[in-house]
Structures are given as structure tokens and as C-alpha cells.
Length: 120
Image (cartoon, rainbow, N blue to C red; front, side):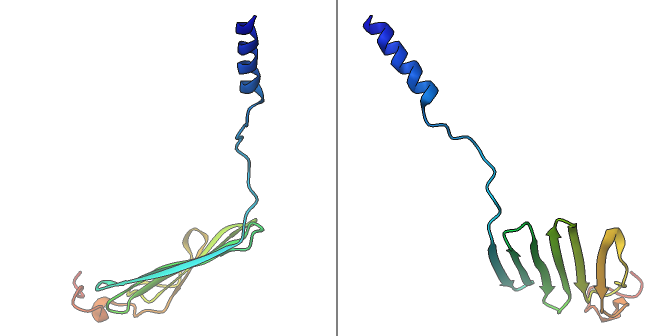
């Protein structure tokens, strides 16, 4: 009889014990950013969310010669949209894959230090 009572208690505790079911948590507002400088250049990122499903931010890199590539983005109920800003040589204002590219760099390699020549 004691055995059945003990077995019943064990089964009851297993069935009624704390359940840690996974659940979907509502989006929370947040804001963060960083910049890391090295001898090669600077990497940076910032992002914020409003807690209602919209996230926006930017990230990028500026090298030691001042060449910049920066991506600004928004993600919300309309999808993901990005805009690339750059002064990289050889870039032009084109919008591939629904990405907005804003280029304001010199459109030749001759001003890009000693890394390139016109023959390359």
C-alpha cells in the first residue's frame, strides 16, 4: 500500500510540476551601438527597435585612406530595405536587388592610393 501511495505521489508531481513552456515574447525597444578603431580603419554599427516590429540602423567601415562603405537599413512590416552610401572608387549610383546605392566617390582607380593602377 505504501508503495502505491509513493508511486502515486511521484506521478502526480511529474504531471503537475512546473512546466517551462517556451512562449513568444513581445518585441522590446532597444538601442545599441559601437565603433572600433584600428590601424586598418574604423568599423561601426548602431541599431534601434521601437518595440512595435520596426528595426532601423546602420553599419559600416572606413579604411585608413578615408574610403567609406556605410549601410543604412529599416526592417518592418514592409520588409527589409537598405541604402548603401560609399565613396569607393569605381562605384556608381545603381540600385541592384532593391538596394539603394548612393556613390559619391571618384569613378577611377587613380586616386585610391598605391593599391591600384589604371591597368588593373
